[in-house]
Length: 277
View 1 (cartoon, rainbow, N blue to C red):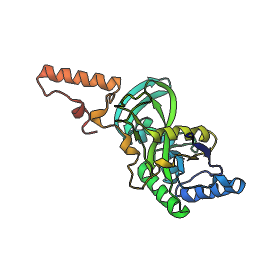
View 2 (tube, one colour; view 1 turned 180 degrees about the horizontal axis):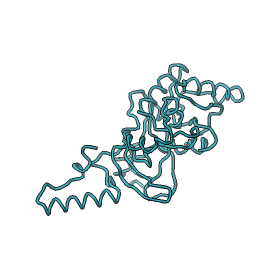
View 3 (cartoon, rainbow, N blue to C red; view 1 turned 90 degrees about the horizontal axis):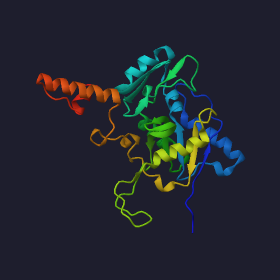
View 4 (spheres, rainbow, N blue to C red; view 1 turned 90 degrees about the vertical axis):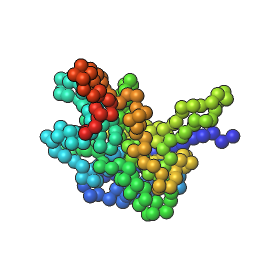
């Protein structure tokens, strides 16, 4: 019996990335240097390359002066989900233009040059597709790409990496209609394997070791054509999102609805409350 298994390792030797750098060349050069010490580390069919969004954003020129961070957060925000005032200022949990729910619109000051903040890639799926297509052509192999960023999660302490961009990869495994180990039918289980791979890769990349790229091997069954949906497809629709509003936003919606009722106006709905953002 062959037991399911996969492996993951970081790609070492990738330098600091700057605006306009060729990420494909940097990754290929770093992998080539690793291969001189261990031939098994050469990229192969079915591998999944997991890339931190920071180096993608740096190559795309997404740095802004730290003094403009709050302005950039506002510009990249579609709607504010929640706010909390604390000693250091105000933390905003927002929906970004990429459809992500993140603190500060994902604009970060860690692992960037002093005096700067870094926005997310403009279109992580487009960036992933470009990387994937170019790497496949240059190396002559079929691999998948995941671009990751770090998320906090409601009801859970800490953060984990998730997929914000992807290409050439099946992102979920839909188990609905199948049975569990005891033969009971599964009605709602959809495994988001892209996020699971992102989290696993971060165990070897880390946050502070200067290792922004990892290879995951053994999950080639998930690697597919370049026409596969990107990570934007993982965002819940408004109709399916049971937790769309933060507490302050929900309170405001209730207040506005009650006021409209008292004034005899049209009722405020979740859909109308978010229109125009």
